[in-house]
Figure (spheres, one colour):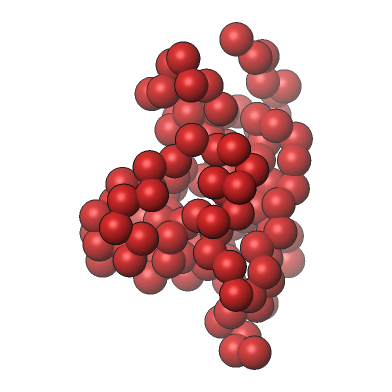
Length: 117
């Protein structure tokens, strides 16, 4: 197993849930299996349809669509992974709200509990 393909965790702040991404999985596969409403798009890191905001973590960006400014707070879970040599996990905070689809792409404040609608 390559160090670059080590397993890592994603913490969903809005659901107070930690997901584990195995070396053979993508973060997108794990997020979709957990019910996070993400548009999968091309699944090669070229379109940005699945770009998701994150609050904290060291991301290995493997996409070809996000700008350096976008990469400061967004990652493409179809191809990107978390830096394996760092402590902690990747904290992502899209709100799960099918009724208000735009809301789930905004990060929530992890210092306060999220109020469900």
